[in-house]
Structure formats: structure tokens, C-alpha cells
Image (cartoon, rainbow, N blue to C red):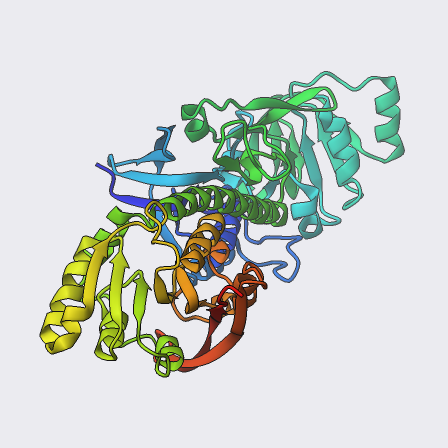
Amino acid sequence: MVDEAYDVVVVGGGAAGLSGALALVRARRSVLVVDAGQPRNAPAGHVHNYLTREGTPPAELVAAARDEVTRYGGRIVTGRVEAAANDGDGFLVTLDGARSLRARRLLVATGLVDELPDVPGLAQRWGRDVLHCPYCHGWEVRDRRIGVLATGPLAWHQAELWRQWSPHVLLLLHHTPAPGPEQAERLAAREITVVDGPVAALEVAGDTLTGVRLASGEIVALDGVVVAPRLSARADVLESLGLKSVDVEFGGQVVGSQVPADSTGATSVPGVWVAGNVADVQAQVIVAAAAGLKAGAAINADLVAEDTRDAVDAYRHRAHTMFEQDAWEERYSSRPALWSGRPNPQLVAEAAELTPGRALDVGSGEGADAIWLAERGWTVTGVDISTTALERAAANAAAEGGEAASRLTWTHADLREEPPAESAYDLVSAQYMHLPGDSRRALFARLAAAVAPGGTLLIVGHHPSDLRTNVHRHHFPDMLFTAEEVAASLDPTAWRVLAAETRPRAVVDPDGRAITIHDAVLVARRLSPS
């Protein structure tokens, strides 16, 4: 059973994960961050090289980031993601405790594990006075006694690097072979002392590192120990998705592993991004945060593309079906009355002074226009595609009483398939008949042909400018038209255009505010043959 569904589940709540989550929640995505609460930098006292946050304790930085994410609506839970699987409709994410979540996309920012040499006391002081990165900790031990514990050939580079921060650097060979003549000369030139023999343990007094004890029993006095751990990606979740970590080499030495990804953090598994140390063993906190932001933006862009593809499919389906009989029947059946029961204002304005004759009311709906015309002496044929609408129209006409009902005929037809008789009506009125462009133009031509010589063609529609307002309109620009477009389709030798204009109309929008919308109004008189 799936408990919840999110646009994005972020696995890991460090700098990378929270930065990506922040970008996503600000993009109005639903986001859940699942964090096991085991940050790699927990032992460190401060975060460095993070512009404007220099010296901030790691826990304080995470707390501030969590607050920012939740302030925008993101959710953060404590837990561990055991596995994730792509089931063709996004990802099924399983948490410890067998809780299941669904996510459209995944951002994995699980970081890495520092694998330290097996030297007693080393792990206990990791991040305090056992250090690895001079850019993270060098300033804090500047000019102090620093011992670089060699774990491979990179130790020579480490020792030279740390020499920038202190003149008192010793290279503890541990189990590493002695440097060759050229490297020994480089170390000597920088006054870096090489100490032979394995390191047996760290020496601590109270809660302060005082040095290391060699296997020989000799004590080397130190204020800090530098060690390059193996940096192994926490990739269990990614491996459950078929993603494997790869070795990372530096100077010919394998220093760790990370999960391959492109510059945005996208992996080879569609829908899965990585950020932070799981994808970049060298990333400091500020770099991890930047990678999280970049991945978050890329994920949102990917979701936007998917949302747009889905919207296009739905748009095409609605455009194809929304004006068919089944759709109209469903619309009318959903409410007791779909329309106001009042005649359309442009019909009233244009037909009030016309001499009654035969009228065709196209898309007559619940009959308000046809009944209004019949009450003024017109013999009216009301045509609609919906039988429910026609039943209501007949009932409304009967309720009005009087002679008008005898002048009304209700006809069920789709005029696209069953065009009206040519030259049969003194007035053809089509109010807000919106169809896809080609279908609409063909129908309007048939309606024009149905007007008798001397008769009137009245076509009214929602003007395209209404889409700029917040009044409810189906957003189908191709289905809207201007009166000028309709007028241009009429043969000027057979028609006299009396009006082809945009008329303002005051309405109340869904929020109760008075706004102005516009009707496209065409009024044309069919000329009698000369």
C-alpha cells in the first residue's frame, strides 16, 4: 500500500539534498526529504568556505536549511530509504518500517563514508584534530605541528599542500614505502620531515591530541593528524535502481567511489538525479549545496516537460471531444441548469427591431434565445446536439405558456453533419458557437447559406482578448474568433456587413470583481438577387 505521493522524494538531508529540496519547493513542487540523521560532517565544529556562513556549526546550518524548506511547504522525515524501484509510473520508494511512497522523480544526496585506516584513536577524533582537507581545516591549525599519516603515494602531495598552512609538517610513512630521491628532495626543500615506521596509536591527554605513538614506542608530538580516508559513496539506494558507483582516481591512486552523472546530476536512469558527495567525492559543503540547487532546477525542468506533454495530450483529447454529443450530455446532466435562462444580450440588441419571420437558433441550449424570439412573433427552429438541453428547452417554453410555444420547434441535430436548409431563414443566430478553426469556418459557411435573401446573419462569440482576463474561458485560442475574421469570409457581392466589431460587456469574475469582457459581433444582411 502506498502511503503518500510526491513530485520529488529527496534521499538525504545534508547541504545537497536540502538545497535541491529548497529549489523544488520554491518551484511549487511537492517534496519529501528523507534523512537518516547521520551527516558526514557531524564531528566538525564549523563549516568553512561557505560564503556568508563562514564558521557556522554544521548542525546550525542544517537546522536553518530545514526551516527554509519547510517554510515553503516541503516535508522532512527522519528515516532511511531501503530501496527504490521504477515501476513505469514513477518510483516506488520503500522506507525502513515498510512504509512506501511514490515519487515522480528522485534526488539522491546520501553523501559518502570516510573509511579510515585502522589506527586506534583515529576514528574517535575524526573531524576534530584528525583532519583531511586543508581548505576545510587548515586555517584552524595554522602554524601548529601537523602529522600527515600516509595511506599511499598521494601522501607526498598532501604534505606539500599542508605546508602552505604550517612550517611544522611531518610525513608519517606508516606502512607506505619511503619516497624516492626526487620526492625526498622536494620534501626536504620544503622542510617537511619524514618519519619512518608504522603508527600504533594516537596519544591523547584529557580531550586533546598530543601526538602519535609509533610501533617502536617512540612518541611524535603533534597538534593535528592529517589522513586521506577512502571516500566511498553511500549508494545502496542507487544500486537498488541499477546504478553502480565507480572508482575515483587521483594521481594514479584510487581515493574512493562516486556515482556517475552529467553536469546537472542526472544519472543514466531516467528520473534519478544525484548531488553532493555521492556524485563528487571532492565537493565541500558550498559545492554540494550548489549541486543540489542545479539538480533541483533540472528536475523541475524535466517535470515541466512531462507536465507539458501530458497537457498537450489532454488538450488534444478535449479539443476532439468537448463539443461532441456525449460531452454536452455530460455537461447538462451535471447541473439542473447550465445557463442563466436570460436571452443573450447581443441577440436582444440586434433582433429587437427586426420584422419577425423564420429564425434558426443554433446551439439553442435550454431555449432562452429561441423562447425570446418566439414571444416576439418569430417562428423558431431551435437546434442543439444535446437531447437533455432540448428537453429542458421544451419544458421552459411550456412553463412560459402563451402562444409562443406553438411557434417553437426543437430539433436534435449536429449541424456539422446535417446542415440546415439553404435560404430557409430570415434570421440565423449563432451565439458563442466555438469550434476548432476549420470546423467552425465550415459551419459558419453553412449557416450563411441558410439565410434567405434579405435575411440577417448574427454570429456572436467570445473575443480572443478574453483569454487575458481571469473570467472562466476554455483556453483554446484556435476556437475563438473576431467578427472581422467572419466578415472577411462573406462574399461582398452577396452580403452587406452591418456590424463587425468588438463590444465590451460588464461581468463579475469568479472572485466577485467587476471586469469588462468583449464579444465579437457580426451582423450581416444577405442581399437579394438583382
